[in-house]
Image (cartoon, rainbow, N blue to C red; front, side):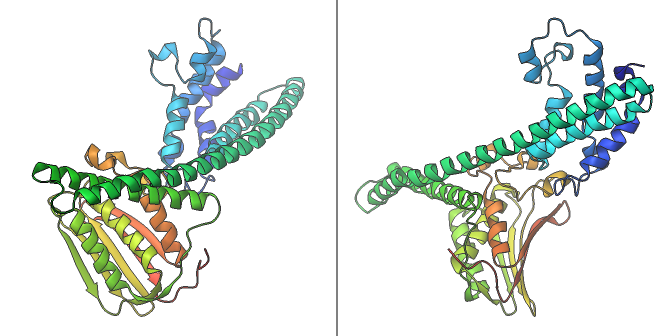
Length: 382
C-alpha cells in the first residue's frame, strides 16, 4: 500500500488525532467545536494524497505557494482557507505550524504499523530527519514571528506619535474657524464635521499608542483612587450621547458605587464599550449602561441589540485588531474603528483586578459585563 492510499483509507483515524492535538492549542481551542477543530482537515489530507499521486506537471510552484490549484478552477485550496479561519478564531502562527507538524507525525506513526521491518527502519530514519527539520522550522518561525512583531509594534508606536502633530494643527484650525464671525451658513457644518473627524482620529491614535505600549511589554498603567464609579458612568454617558444625539443611551445607577479606580482610564473603558455599542447596535433599539453596587464589587453592563456575535468570535473579540464584520454593522461604522477598543478596555479592567466578559443572543442582546473589585491592588506604575 502506498502512503497516498493509506491516507485515503484511514482518514477517520488521522482526523481523530488531528482533532485531539488541535484541542491542546489553547486558549483558541477552548470553546471550539469538534467540527471547527477539524476545519478543512479532511480536504487537506485528500489534497495531499492527490498531490502525491499526481506528477504535478504544469503546476508552477509559485501557484501552489499562493494557495491556488488549477484543479480547483482558481479557488483557494483547503489549506489556504484553513489558515485564514485559524487566524479568525485566534490561533497564532506557531500553533498553525504545530498542527502540520503533528499531522505529519500522526500519519507516519500510523503507517509504520503496515510496513515490513526493513521498510520500518527506513521510515524511522526519515521520521527522525523530519523531526529535526521541524524543530529547526519551529525555532526559525518563533524567532521570525517575534522579530516581526517587535518591528511592527515599534513602527506603530512611531506612526501614532508622529500623527499627533499634524492632527493637532487641523484641530486648532477647525477650532479657530468655529469661533463666531469666522464662517457662516453651510461652512459651519463642514467645520463641525472636521472637528468630529479629528475627535475620531484622536481616539484611534490613542488606542494605537496604548496597543503598542502593551505589545512592547509596558502594559497600560493605572493609578487607582477612591472614586464614584457612578460619576464616571455619567460622564461617559454624556460624552457619547453628545457625539451621537440620534442614539438613545439609557443610564441606570444602583447602590453604593464607590471603588478604587483610575478615573481617566476607567472613562476610557466606558467610552470604548459605549462607542462599540453605538457602532454595532440596532439604531431603533436603546443602549443601556447599568452600574450596580454589590458588597465587595461593582457590576457594570453595557447592552445593545443588533446582530448576534457568532459563538466562534466570542473567544477572540478581545484580541487586538479583531473586527466582527458579520454583525450587520454598516460599512461606515467599521471605518471608525481599528479593532483595538475592546482589547484596551479588557487590559485596563484587568489592571484594576477586574474581569470583562461578553455574551450575545437574540433575546438578551450583546452584553459586555464588568466585575470590578472595590479595592484595587493591581498595576499602579507608569
